[in-house]
Image (cartoon, rainbow, N blue to C red; front, side):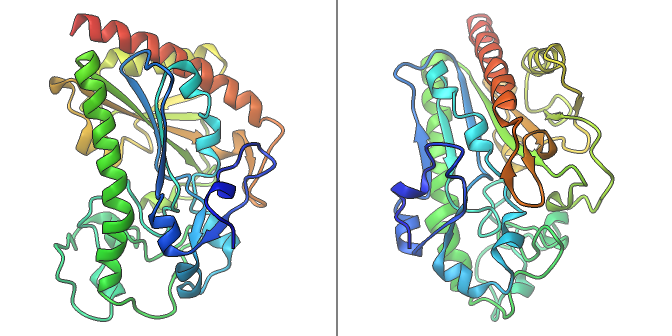
Length: 313
């Protein structure tokens, strides 16, 4: 078993999945990397790149590790790892989304996954729950059942208490602290998308993704046009193919945190995995550092625009 310090890769050569006991992972379920000085109201989040798998979860699942890992937004935390050096805080979940998904509402639970009736609030009509992709997913990225048997109801509360809620408390604290300092906060919520289609967000499509990046601002509801426009123009200038709000307009984080009228802006960024990795072997491609360079420029420009936006708010 690997300890958590060994599970934080320092280089691209150390990006394999790790295992830890549930207790060890719960003691450090996320990582916040703060800059020496925060330069602007921009903060970065990577909620789906966690690759430390609890031993207990590995025993519960009937799927091979390589199948489970296809649900990860592989290496996104490393793609944006330059953020703190640019004066931008970075928060990354260390637990995998297939274990508990922080980009879901806490009530998006599938009662059918559990051996007994849940006492927690349940949003059974959620399209994501119906697709098997709730806060505790039932299906993996290949649409196979994750568990061979039903889970005890206590499992839901435990995962929410130990992983989901601590991540959101930390994210909420980071947003609040940034807003206190600058008057506004701009959150860039970073994800990756499979080039063959978007099953893990319940879209049930295998139509090949024909763009490099998708910017989701809930059709203007979660983020100021000035910020979305800066992101789009920066990526296009760097030679990328970009689209807004299709097929991703913004998940739970964008919908729950994005309140432009109250000074909190959330822009969701989806990165085509074919740009930087082998989607079959789950290994970084030679182009990995080139994508890092693109995102470094994006972060710099969004940081500058966020600072300008704060001055006019």
